[in-house]
Amino acid sequence: MGRIAIVGGGAVGLSTGLALLDAGQSVLLVDDDVDGQAASWGNAGHIAVEQVEPLASLALLRSVPRRLFWRGGALDFPLSAIGAWLPFGLRLMAAAQPVRFRHGRDALRGLLAQAMPAWDALVHRIGQPDLLRQDGHYVLWHSAQSARAGRAGWAAADTGTAQVHDATLGELAQLSRLTSEPMAGAIRFSGSGQIADLSALRLALRAAFVAQGGEVVGRSATLQRVGNRIEVPGIVADSVILCAGVRSRPLMEALGHKVPMIAERGYHIRADAADWPADLPPVVFEDRSMIVTRYRDCVQAASFVELGRVDAPADPRKWDRLERHVAELGLPIRGPFTRWMGCRPTLPDYLPAIGRSDRANNLFYAFGHQHLGLTLAPITAQIMAGLVTDKASKLSNSLFDIRRFA
Image 1: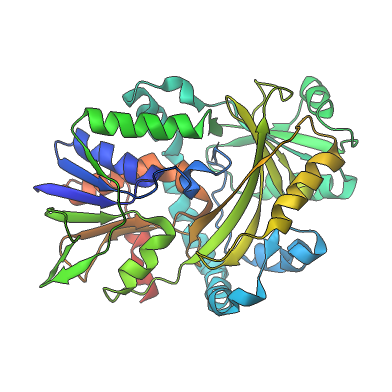
Image 2: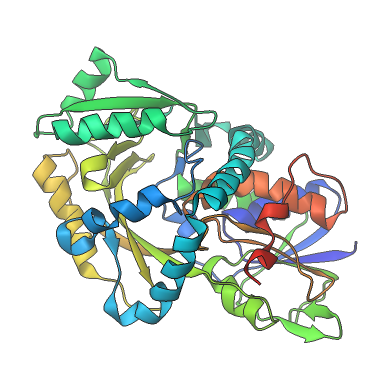
C-alpha cells in the first residue's frame, strides 16, 4: 500500500491513523488544528449509542416550529445563511420520508452496535482506559407535559444497544439537588457513556500515533488531481484519506463529488467543576435542549443546532442563553465561563460519508458524522482500515457512499 496521508486530525482522523498503523501501514497526518478547537474536542463528550434514529425524520420536521431559536428553542436558521440551509433543508425533507428513514436507521444501528466495544478497545490500545466512562446518562424534565411526552417518545424509539428505565428514588434525589426548579421526572440510559476528558483524549491519541511511528504535519491541506490520482501538495503519499469534517466539502467538490453538507454549529460554555458532582454522568435538560457534562477539571453546558456557514461569526446570544439556562435552573455552575463554537459536519440524511472515491483511485473519505463523530470514530477507523488495506470489514459501508447524492 505504501504511505498513507490522512487529511484531518479530529477523532475520526486520529483513530483511523492508529488503526492503519496497527495494520502495518506507514501513516502521515496533516492537521492544522494546533489548539484543538475542532468539533471533536468541544462536543458534549457523549458516546451516544442510543441515537439510532436519524434526525432526518418526519418527527423532526413536525417539531421544527416549537424548536426555533426565536421561540426559545435550540434550532436556528440565520437569514444570512439561507443560501446554505434552504437547499439542505429540502434534501433533509426528502431523506425524512419513511422508506429512507428506515434504511438510515438500520445503517446507523449496525454502526452504533459496535461503537462502545470499539471505544473500549481504543482506550485500552492507547493505555488510557479511564478516559472512557460507561455509566450511561440522564434525561430530565421540569414540565409534567414534557415529561409525559419525553418518556413516551423514548419508550417508542429505537435505542439500539442502550436501555432506558425510570430514574430510581435515589437518582431522582441526586438530580433534584442540582437544580432549584422542581423536577417533573427523569429517566436513565444504560449502555451509553462519555469521554472523561476530551483534551486528554486528543493528547493521548496523538501521543500514541507518534509513538508508533506516525508523522504529524501541522498545516492545512489541499488536494490536486494528477491523472487519475490525488496528491496533497508537499506531501509524498500513495493514498489519501479525507477526514476533514466540514472542510471536506470544498475539497471533495473540487474533484467533482456532490457533497450537500452543512455546518451545523453548536455552542458550549465551560466553568470550574468544583460544585458539580464528579461521579454524575451527563445530564440532558430536555426542556431546554441542553446537555451538561462533567469533565475531569471542568463542567460544560452545550446546546444549539445553528444551520449556517463554516466561517460565519459566532452568535453571542447562544452563549448568553446557555448562561441564562444555568442561572434560571439554579445549577451549581459558577462563572467565569469560557465560550466555544464548533461546526458539526452534517449531511441531509444524517448519515456519514464513508468510502472510496470513484473520481480518483487512491482517495478515501470519512466525514459527515453529524452529532455522532465522537461516538463513531473508532468503528469508522476500523472500516477505513479495511477499505484501504483491501481487507473485508464486518460492517458494510455501502449506504454511506457519497455517491448517494450524485
